Amino acid sequence: MPTTAFSHTVAQAEQAGRMPTRRTVDVTDVRELTPGVMRFTFRDEFIAANTEPGQFVNLYSGNPQHLMPRPFGVSEVDGDDVSLIFAVVGYGTEEFATLTAGDHVDVLGPLGKPFNIRTDADYLLVGGGLGIPPLLEAAQALSERADCHTTAVLGYRDAHFADVYAAKYADEVHSIDESEGNVLTLLERLWPGLQERGRELIILSCGPTPMMKAVAEWAAKRGVDAQLCMEQRMGCGYGTCVACTIDTRDGREKVCEAGPVFTAHQLGWDNK
Amino acid sequence: MNIEQELNETPTNLYMPHEWRHGTVVAGVPWKNPVGTASGTFNVDACGQFYDVAQLGSVTTKGVSPVPWLGNPGVRTAESPAGTVNAVGLQNPGVDHYLEHDLPILKRIGATVVANVAGHCDDDYAQVVEKLAASDADMLEINVSCPNVTHGGMSVGTDPVALGRLMDRLRPMTDKPMIVKLTPNVTDIAAIAKAAVDGGADCLSMINTLVGMRIDIRTGEPIIANRTGGVSGPCVFPVGLACVWRVRAALPDIPIIGIGGIDSGEKALEYLYAGANAVEVGGAALYDPTAPIRVARELEELLDSRPELTEKLAKGDTWR
Image (cartoon, rainbow over all chains, first blue to last red; front, side, top):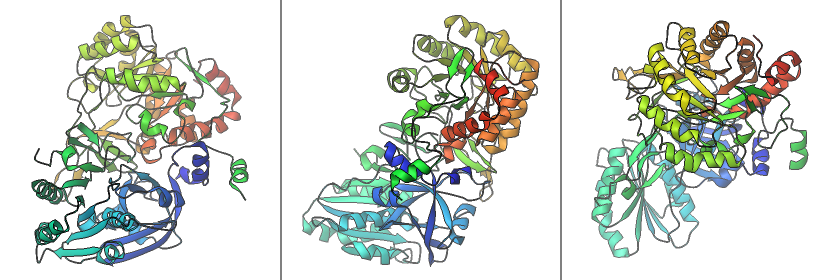
């Protein structure tokens, strides 16, 4: 790709007060968490320093036949290293899964509007499957705040691949797979204890749309505010192509720019 | 090495203002360089995060309609070999929002602005042109080539009679240079080009996207909700180039903006050699946000050693 000719774009962009464009970075670690699910780490000082929970990055294929961005929520930041977790679902993710430390990949980001975690409160991080990664970063960010208590509520099809990462940062981790139930099963179980704590509760959720909708409705019935991290097929990831729209109370919005995080109210999922 | 030294030793900085060496003239309007953005791939807020968009030869903004349009339902885009298929359906917040928001921002920073005009019928186009005629837009581009709307768009741009009728309506409404954007989805693009010019077009731009689709083999159903969409990206480059070549052969004097698959200075130069006065970068910006400004810089270096071509461009003439 011709873009790789410009290797100093981050420094140049920062000097000019601009967002750095697509750039080539080092892959530092790629590991399989469970068959077909990868944790992918690359080194980018700019993303590491600027990303907020719920934001995403674009990865680009090294194959010039495959041009569309692959957007992934950031799951963890460690120094200048940025980690993502994704499932191998097509030729794009298959290519990334074959990369190893020392290889290069093109990235853009951080992109999109993050979760609002400015309130001191108890946070319930409700994730399903490959929707869990952005909640891990939320747990990491909230772990640095003494006044926030975080409870991860994670649902899987089978292998509990993200529990170990959630446990690094969340105060409590509860997980379930389809043999036993889903995240709503856990929420019902946890609800009496959460009520006893008596603090303001905020739900951050990411997962399959039907799951998030059910979580938002569960929250609305209990007077709990929910923020949902949405997914839509993207053409650019930075707000210019108008491909990734969803309908909200504010009209038809771009998920990459107005989102990916929307409140339950914005989505009309709060029964109001 | 500190950052200052590093920056000074880096030859190409896409983020800082640049003294352009090779301008062009398109239908009487001077462009700082021969590279603009293609409609539908440019949004001032999104693209302006990455670089100073006023550095480009021009910016062509996304099609605006008389009232806000919701566009097509999702899924709106799919990958295709060396390209994408999209069917956004011209979602836009309407011409009034454009006049209040996008256009003032672009003029304030000194951009040369081509306002793209969309419509479902002749009345729609006329309402938008009427409002833009009194605006600061430098040029108007009439979009009669969008393949993703059921009325207007390509249905006008594939019919010389309908196009002539639309131009008869729009031409008297403004003295601003009027560009007609052509579709490649016709048997003879030169015939449509002639109809546009006979109707008073000052300039032609080509190509809009080619009709295409993708099917999900797990379900057997089209990936895009609109079923078909418009193909863009490097895969359409030779198609756009041949369209410019054929229209240039048929109409030696009309200014032409070449569009289609441009992702490098070399490809931009091919369009100039085919007879274009200028080019626009579209799909490449979707996977490389600074592609338009990068192409402009790459083209500039290639033009440095081609004085015969740059002299023609500077006068508004073309290579052939």
